[in-house]
Image (cartoon, rainbow, N blue to C red; front, side, top):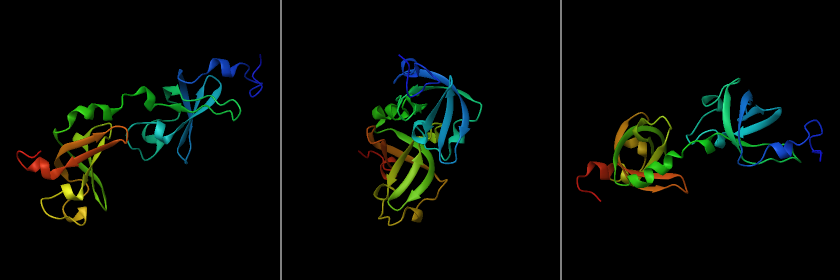
Length: 183
């Protein structure tokens, strides 16, 4: 039976399926953050959140035009002619490593400040895994603004006090890391 959504590509729905691993060549990196990949005559896309587990500024931080990559097919929508892919589905989730690490002391640079705390890249990891040190855990005294005690680029020693892989959160404490015998 011919695939009516793709008369020029009969059987496309039979050759591509959800969960399949395919290899394709990046043909375009769009300004709006979607990478297009040629997978055997079909143009597929990888949205920014599916490029990597780490936070990225632009798809070109992960892929380049002409680069060949393997990716997992997330869906095959023959009606809209869309095939979304995921690179990160083929990578181990770095968050899972930290579930067993609660209580561990780590170091890392402050990457950004928000009104309620500071993001710290754990051990300057290549995967960009970050945790949050809430204002209440930045210093032994009350902190209104994180920039009053730390700056972007400062390297902090922190303790992993909670990991929630489902919500993708690592909670860190500078106070507990600097206080001997803290719980």
